[in-house]
Length: 264
Image (cartoon, rainbow, N blue to C red; front, side, top):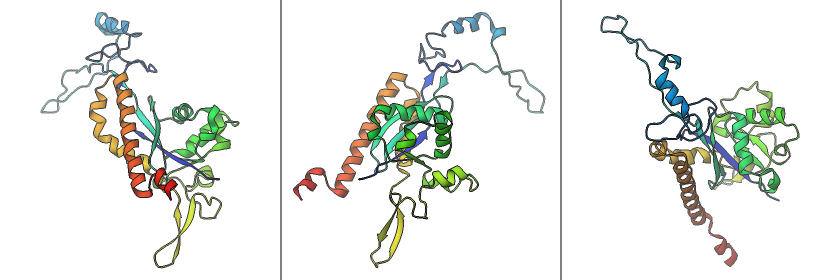
């Protein structure tokens, strides 16, 4: 048999959406609008009834510290909170999804369920590395103790963030340790022999591949922020495809292609 590991992380790539709380709909007017088609009527109400609009005045100070006139901030459109990327530990991307308002465990689980259908548990990874895996695991156990995820996948904190998790967190230490030293997870910690014949224990997977992908996505942050929801989704799919092609080419260069292995 074999095991597969996936890595996921949040990245602050955003596009504008309706400013009404809990509304995830796209804007009716992306040039200067702030509402979706459903809530577009609120724009006219704000124009006709300024006193009914909740404002947050700011009182600037003059050069001598005196209080100035109140400045009313104009409304702005809302945005999604972040993008959640998921990829195999080798670096090949699997999928992505959007988080609204926060990177909460419930929204992360929703994205995982969209990428890995419950009816296709055979393709689910054996391990998922995530910086907040302990809270995600607690959420799954609390909301659905019979969740298929508990039978197919172990949720682990990536090695970079694990050192900052509390040592007193029993759930995190017992169930989300990315490299247990007691030999309980031989698929996570393997032995390698160096050039001098010394044996070392090393991590079997690169748990930071999502960070590497997100670093690459940073250069596209500005143009993505100005896109409509449709253009944003399409462009993200294109970026993930381009990154996939580059990772496959890199892996084939390092390990050889399937055709090369068949010839051998």
